[in-house]
Image 1: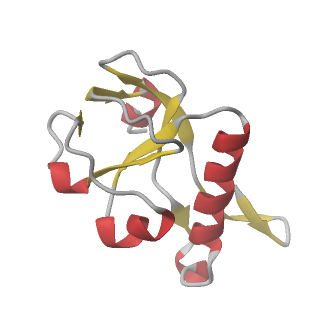
Image 2 (image 1 turned 90 degrees about the vertical axis):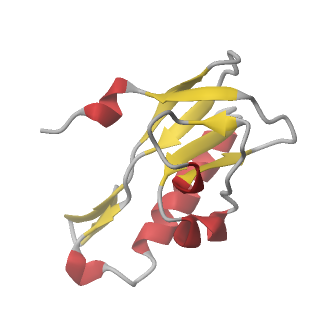
Length: 117
């Protein structure tokens, strides 16, 4: 969460994902949100960079997301054909392994990402 003068101006979420080959310690990145009046000020970038750093420090092995490749490639995310999220076009399903060990299979996001209310 990002705050300015005690007001929340941005948010990001990371939750564990399940990968069919039983790879552990992978996470999904939820939507990055920044108040419209605070966008284009580096808040979203800072949230992503800080979040990924925390995941690495806690022993995370990688992160996956559904998003705009042009935005997320700046953080090192890219498409890995061996990782699939069913029902999502492959070109917008991206991953960032924190080592050379890249899992294979279907990725299932935590049910927390499915909440709509």
